[in-house]
Image (cartoon, rainbow, N blue to C red; front, side, top):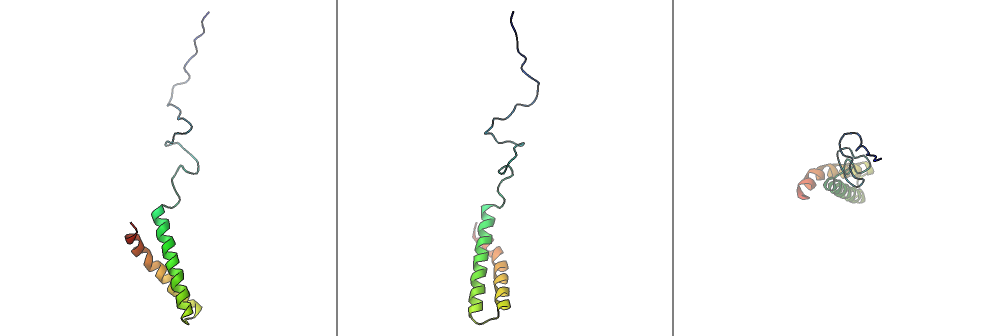
Length: 86
């Protein structure tokens, strides 16, 4: 007597464990949280803002004025850095 096994239910093929596809879930399924360009621009702008704030404070300006100068230079630097870092 010969037994024949059925191929299984019809449907889409199952992806291999290492393959990425539209149904993939997990920490890397949607891509990075921040693109590298955005992270670099924001980090550079924050460093520039901190330097401006420290130098402004050391020149004798009150703390609030130094913080405001640092925040303004950070905000103004983001569009400039976005175009320079391409």
